[in-house]
Image (cartoon, rainbow, N blue to C red; front, side):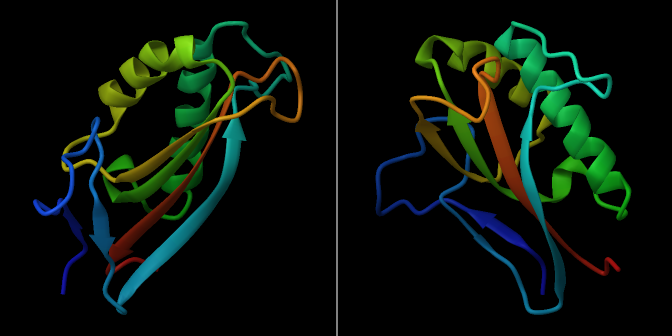
Length: 132
């Protein structure tokens, strides 16, 4: 059995690049990645939401690859964003890195994150069959 990302035609169409649901078979290995924020390894934080998003996805890439996974194995993403006006920059970075079929996703606008410099936090789940 394979991992299946799907849309359901009996509900409203997706409002962006995401799937309505994911079926993960019992044989799959699943990784839950902690929320990542846009902080460089040296501790610096860019003021731009697009650059913070690039850093987050680079962190995901490094973490996923450490276990033999790739962006194409992401099945669910949760976005926590402070300012709605940052959404186009965030989506542009995501769309340049996450391939179709797109994972399931949720987006929540929040009042604040753990530090005032953080513009967003993203967490994700990746799954694949035949992984260790």
